[in-house]
Image (cartoon, rainbow, N blue to C red; front, side, top):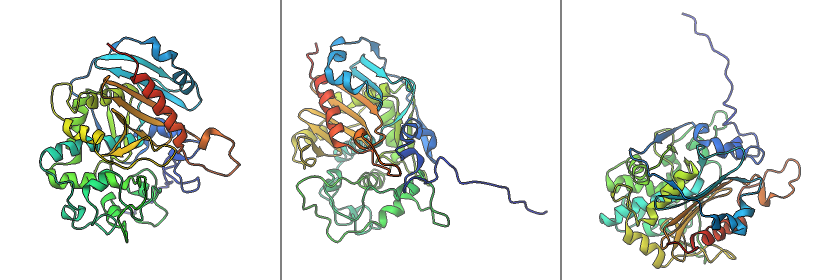
Length: 385
């Protein structure tokens, strides 16, 4: 039989065309990408909860009256927002091209799931003072001598940068023609360092830290990261699906690979409001580990955002915890008032200003992220009965 070679093209949704950026993250198409990353990624899993946390619609008009809420939900960058307290939906709003049933990439907010996992591991006896190489003898010099505590706190110095080369390993973009497609753990082993000590005053933020922590969790707990995620989805009582990117071998990517609806992200935030307890009373995190994140030492973000501390894969502001996501998302949970705020937006250009033709810009804007945190702080600090 004569074989026939059929015509093919590289998948256009994954082909780098914009200065090393795949279409999901190019400024011209980033909004489309963040609204559809759950279907764009080459590999992934989808998880649903058995029991859904019922949200009674009890809108609080004080939230809508907050000036920052009005401003941040009326920009062209805004996608969606939901505010939840216990079993009540206090507020939600969506852009015309989005809606309550639409999943949205939460990017680095997914790092908070590693906090829940490590709460369980510490309660089970994991020593955070131990070195990474004790659990991952194959790891490279970028992490071998680092303590697990420093990896959790974004306090490790190595040659990894939040570049786009890792996106090939996790299926967010295609490799260059003829280049190999390695698994994410192989990518982690290639990271090097001559001095893992972070000598700076602020955190040294690296998404690879989360992947290293996930690998250690599988070794120490003798369970897959997917198993932990099933428990998290069940404990949050999500209504729709938790979409999780994996690498080509099926390992979930929690440094930024999840998508949820705004309501479900707010439901997820309620796990922290309950001190690590699930909707059915199951334990999915550790109340003691959460309190340590709030009360314990930790480096802060760089000035002028140093009022935000980072510890145990959480951003900490007073008695509130959460995390931001690249290009405009944030989850914020006030542990005293038990209010969680889920906010989605997509920064298509840096600062939203004029961009010369041919220049592709980042979606990172720490000033904007801080504005979102201040808005969430105002919402969660309203007097609640």
